[in-house]
Amino acid sequence: MLVGSWPNAAYFPYPPLNLDFVTMSPSGKEVMEMKLNQARWNEKLKTIKRKFGDIPIFAFIDWAATSNTPLGRFSQSLTKEQQREFLKIADEFFREKDVIFVYPVHGGTMGIDAHILSFGKSRVYDALAPEFQTYKTIRELAQKRT
Image (cartoon, rainbow, N blue to C red; front, side, top):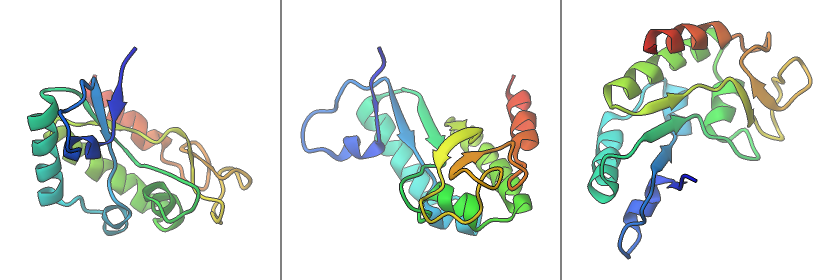
């Protein structure tokens, strides 16, 4: 069994937990601007490594009930082309930071208020959906890592 948490566990006022991994997400603003904040990420990664040691850090495009989330912004505000470009930007950025980028293939709600739906009917993101068409880019990025 593995135990993971969000990076805010590094700021708790008691001794650090014995975590196996930490998960993080770009902010909605970073998605919209298609630029990851170097200073923000450097500080968070430094704190995580100081508190938890050399454990895997996973970054994914987070989601929740509304489209006012990173995945909501990614799927509802960016064009297909921008989505593909953001995946490339994030992949390169996280690779340089030794963070494992978890590609958004299937899953994650785009929000109950999503208007661009996977296959015209699902509020769950799907890289194969014609509305997004990011799967080919994801495959290419993943193949570079092997």
